[in-house]
Length: 357
Image (cartoon, rainbow, N blue to C red):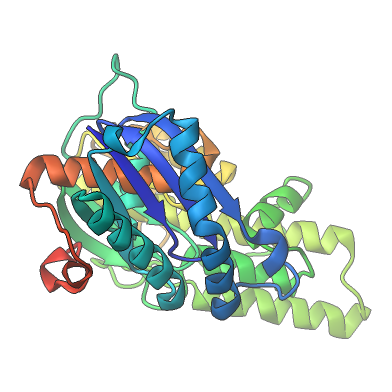
């Protein structure tokens, strides 16, 4: 089954053709990063206008690179949300119009479900993914811990109560006068810094909570930056590197510990990292180190023995970590395979039954 995926949830105009949920025949992305670097963040109206300009050329290119005509496409998948409303409308309108005109089933996809299924895009047939598994999605607008016992079977265990980790990375990068997007900039600068230079808080919330909060960590960084600037009237390269490294360490430790604590509770076979921040090398390293060391830290910072040894997975290709249409097509395939439920009009996109959780 070949699915044309369309993704316009934020500032990437993307289209892809994916076969049977795992074989990527094309994956085209028109990035708006240079445009939004001018404002240090995404302006929704600007993003939407760019989607209008790019959506049809991107779809045409995806079909061409996949060497597919419309007769070879079995269904159209599109991100229904969450995301920027003005951006989502462009993708949904294009997808529903094409589905009607070409008489193809329309499969709306939750954006977070797309990130989850990105890990299936480079699955090795010799090393298949096994359920039950726990997925931590980490991106600019979202943080979720999701338990999966089978395909399209999601149980939300925890989510961010304020800032998502990716948003915190962006805002800390701005505090340190680094570029946009902040995640790659923080990671780049942190390589030259001392992660123990500043003892930033590790916020674990209540004892039994799997929710996240990064607003306090962000404020702690801001206070240190303000104090440094007040005393030195400038931020040195060493200070910026140390601050970035210390922030990254605090954020990544909380993410890894929450993931493994939930994994131990539910005795899963695998733990997955997904979303833009899952590309962060330090997050991958800390999670792997915790699993190899057989421990995680609780809400008091106490080292707890990890009673399981789950397999760690994340997208091998970084392009599958960030917003892309291949992940949308992959999620659509596994949902469609399980429910066999096509949607052929735009009204279906607002159906409450399509919510992920």
